[in-house]
Amino acid sequence: MSAQFDQREPQAYDRSMETHIHKLESELIALKTDVAIIKSNYATKADVADAKNSVIIWVVSAVLLAQLLPALLKAFS
Image (tube, rainbow, N blue to C red):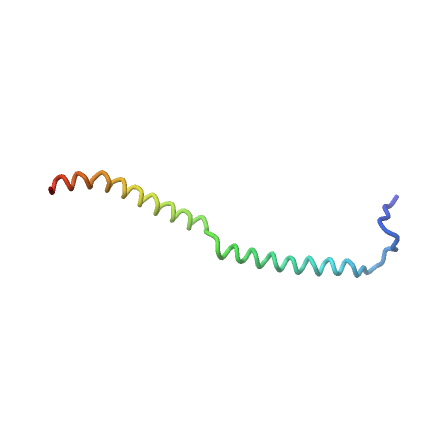
């Protein structure tokens, strides 16, 4: 029992399949280009870790300065 989808006879070489393959190849090239752009522009785990450490250092420094500055101003006034 075989399924018949259209009235065409099966051929050894199907030109419509060639057009489908050509379309897939062109879409694959576009996908490769998009992935290359994404890899070059977006942050890596190391970039995110460096940014996180920088933010932590700034916050800790700001808190320490906010605690020490009034005491220093009072001592030198």
